[in-house]
Each structure stands twice: as C-alpha cells, then as structure tokens.
Image (cartoon, rainbow, N blue to C red; front, side, top):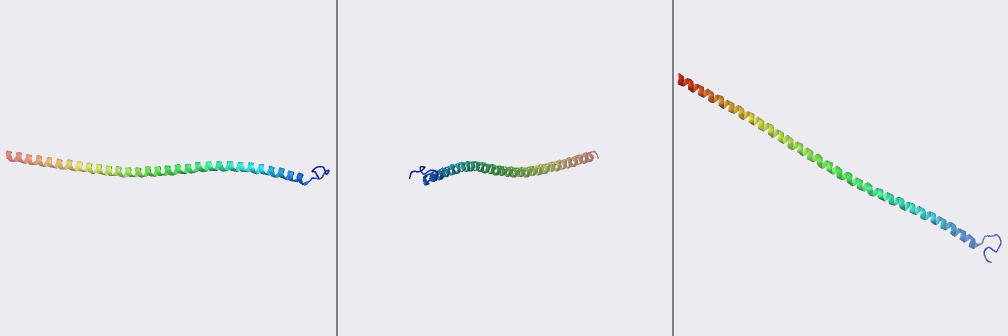
Length: 120
C-alpha cells in the first residue's frame, strides 16, 4: 500500500518523516546552543587571559613598589650616615677651633709674660 492512499491514517513513512523533522529541529536548536556556548567559552577565555595579564601586571607593580621601598629605606640609611658624618665633622671642626683658640691664648700669655720679663 502506498503512503497516503489509505485515506486519512498516517502511515509509518509519514510518522518517520515527522520524527525526522522534529529531530532535525532539535539538532538545529542543539547546534545553535552549542554555538552560543562556544561563543561564551571564547568570551570567558578572553576574560580569563585579561585577568591573568592583570594579575601579572599587579605582581610586577608590587615588585616595583617593594624595590622602591627597599631603595627608599637604603637612601634613608645613607642619609642618616651622611648626617652623622657631617655632625661628627662639625664637632671635630669646633674642637679644632677651640684648641686653636686655646693655643693662641697660651701663646699670647707667653708673649705677654716675656714682655713683662723684659720690662722688669
């Protein structure tokens, strides 16, 4: 018996064609969903790469900040050493001036005594 000649009943070929059509529609939906999922995965992969790059930049900046901090601390240490040396040199200069003044006074006193001895 040829399909459709039987008068109103749906034969196995019609049922199969209907099922094939439904399966093809489901397949198209699944393909569209897979394409959307692939696009989302690609977007997420791009975001993940950006996140990794951002983390690498943050780590590099943290390392740079630490180097700058270490350098700053070292410069403060050197500045303190320099200040201590300058203060020490100033104190030595004051001591030398005081010693020089004492020597000059002693020499003046000796000269004065020598003059007094000559006059007397």
